[in-house]
Every structure is written in structure tokens, then in C-alpha cells.
Length: 290
Image (tube, rainbow, N blue to C red; front, side):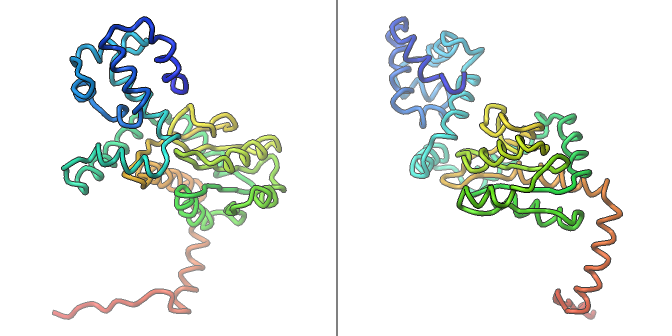
């Protein structure tokens, strides 16, 4: 229902009561704002009762207002421009303390991710990754930071890690053209979803590689080409993508894989410690005397 909610409202307009039509018209014209309003606030905005808003959601086939609100939020996260995100965040934050509100939201997203995690899918992803012949990792725009982080740590455990990183689609294909069965491709993308990442996932899947998607929803476009999907809740803090929960999931993936490939990891780190020491990679901190 996520992609069709606005059409659903439009198609049912003739059967709505006067109050429900006021709600419908407001959502159709300002869905970016309505999606983050409580039922009470939406009712006050269009001059109807909270119960009318709840009945409106039920009329559309939802099991309650929160369900309709969630559907609206999932739809707009992939549609809002950066400017619209700023406007929405102004309404959401209002006069609240910014630091507290953003951090509390991040805490909630980690809690929701933990509750919704499919342990079987996570375990399957860990095993496929631990036994991969070669690992490809792709994330662009804000998801690029997650891809860089994941690539950095996996290189301690694997000899063949390719960080697919380019702005040109033709160059993406050049970087993954040798992918084959036994390889693992990890695609990371969150609203607004990257078309480049989705196209790359389609290509490597056609070549027989295992494809792992790390995204926020089962309706995300990445899932169409994924053999395994790992979900992590994301949010938007103004124009900024809040990716704290996805980073926590990536951390868990790295740690789980490291337990299987502990021998390779220990060998690599032992050699690196020797090199770091020889070439003074890190500052030496002197102990303070009493």
C-alpha cells in the first residue's frame, strides 16, 4: 500500500464525509508535513476531531492511525528533496532541544532495528560473507560512509575486497565486471535510494554472485535483486540522513564475520602492529607521573 496511498485517497474521495475530505485534501497537498503529525495535531490543523482522523485511517483500510502514518513516512522518505526535508524538520523539532531530540530518535531507531532484525537472515549473510571468494561493497552519497567503514574493516580479514566507488555507471560495471559465483556483493542504500546501486546489484546477481542488501524497508528497490536483505531503520534529521542504526548493524556484521575469520584477522593485525611500530604510525602517549 506504501506507493499507492495518495492514489487510494484520491480514488475514495467521493465517499468521504465532509471532515474526512478536509483530511484527505490536506494530506494530498501537504503529505510531507502530515506524515509527521499526530492524529490530534492533524485534526487541529484541518479543524476536525482526533476521532475523525482515526476513522479516516480505518476507512482507507489501515488498522489504526499509526499504520497510516508509517505508510506515509515510508513513501515520502524516498521522495522528499533536501529543501523539503529542512521544512519538515522545522515542524518536527519546533522549539524542542535539537541535540536531545536527534539523539533520542537515533536511540529509538537502534531499538526498532534490534526488535525487527531477522536473525536467520543475519546469520546467513555472515556465513556467505565469511566464505566469499571476493567481496564487493557499494554505497553512494551518505551511504558511502557506511560502505567505507565496512570496507576498511573487512580488508583486515579478506585479501580481495573491492570498494565500488565511482560517479559513472559505466565505471561501476568496469569495477564489477569480473564478479562470479562465490563472490559476495553488498549494496547499501537508504532514502533517497541510489539508482546506481540498484543497477549494480542487478548486474552482479545476473552473474551468479550472492547479493546482500542493507537498507531500511522490504519495499526498498534494492530488495528486488537481493538474495539476503538486512534491515536497519533510518531517519532524516533535517537534510541529514540519520544512519546510526545502519552503522550499528554494520558493526554487528563485522564482529560476527571476524569471529569466523579470526585466524586471518590475527595474522593481519600482528603484521600490521609490527609495521605501525616500525614506522611510528601512532603517537606515543607518555604516562603522567604522580
